[in-house]
Length: 323
Image (cartoon, rainbow, N blue to C red):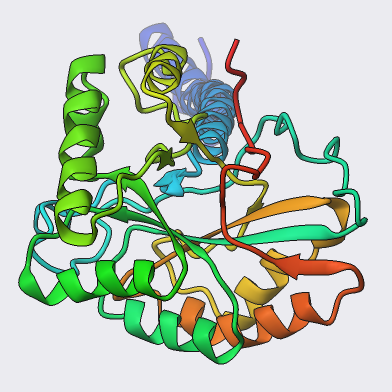
């Protein structure tokens, strides 16, 4: 029988228990290490999958952000008070305003017979508390612009609609309510909104407007209606729609400086023989107003370039085809 160092005899059963205990002492840490290794491998695989899913989700978000640049586009959705013309509320969703498709008449346009580049300054979403400042600056530089307005029935805004017309600028239509979820429900809802704005502007200014800009642009991804259907409707009504090929970037919900706006408006300006610049006329767009004088001066300093308002002779910029 096994003996101890003191010469005492151990029973076989006790020896087996000691051996099992030793094996257990060895196996427990090994098993723990093995379990932890398996768990780490599983978590590593899961982490990799989660990161992949996040990258895919971010890619989708980025694509949507770029495509919906609407007027934040994208031309975005204004708050109920602003949309109904009741005040100058902030955007509840930023209007993303970078178009992704090639404009039909962007770099393929040809200068007019005099070789003059035409630049169109366009302002969406007005009138607002900044409209007067914008008009003052335009008057100082003897420049005409185009205002794609919404419907605001408060008495304080009516003189601004009239001033736009009286000072020789082009009055154009954006939408009456600027509520994307209502405007783009159906062709009927879009046409009703546009007619309401057209009649309102005629009552206020005596001008029967025929130029339009879709909220979010013709390339917006918000509309539940095929945009070609809405474009066909405008054609039937002898109306023209205008997108843009240069964006100021001022539709972003975050702050953008006047220097950034100026750079956005001018960095690619020389690429186009007809440039339609998208800006916004809203109470929270002070940077746009601050950038405007320098923008005008920069354009006026360019050779063979002039700033003009949209007219019947303007070649439209379209993000999507009429076909």
